[in-house]
Image (cartoon, rainbow, N blue to C red):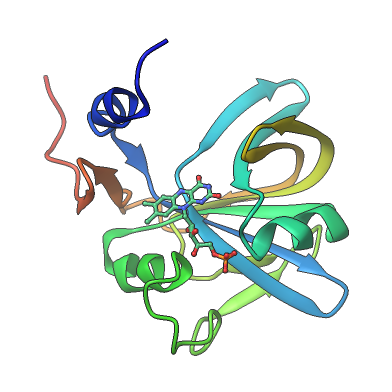
Length: 163
Ligand SMILES: Cc1cc2nc3c(=O)[nH]c(=O)nc-3n(C[C@H](O)[C@H](O)[C@H](O)COP(=O)(O)O)c2cc1C
């Protein structure tokens, strides 16, 4: 087995789109910044997110059985930091425009795109739970924008298309 240091070093070379995974349990809305997201199936449309069991978000997804994956644009970097717990004095949804679609999980109005999901399976995976969600609503909200990326421990923007 390799060391977790080597694993982290290699993973720093994996670029990913930054998302905010939101959820709703009864009247409580919440969410966190997440990059551990993957599309899973196209028929029926299903995705997965990996959520650390120690987060506040985790029990709320378990309770509400819904989540919405919001793809961020570069101007939402401050929101990404807030939802990653780096601005603990700020309420998560303060001055954030959002709405409900199919599941009631918050859809961020300024997101690039969203996938609004109902949990169909939860797999125990060590310090994380893999939540598999069936996509019940989705839309590209800002088709002219590129995503906010996370790479090598820093935020990035796309460098441009290769021909
Ligand atoms: C770029 C980035 C990606 C992250 N990806 C994940 C992730 O995929 N899953 C996860 O559980 N936490 C992830 N985190 C950490 C959570 O955002 C962080 O622990 C957050 O404070 C949890 O909030 P909560 O405990 O209030 O729910 C990520 C953080 C950053 C900055």
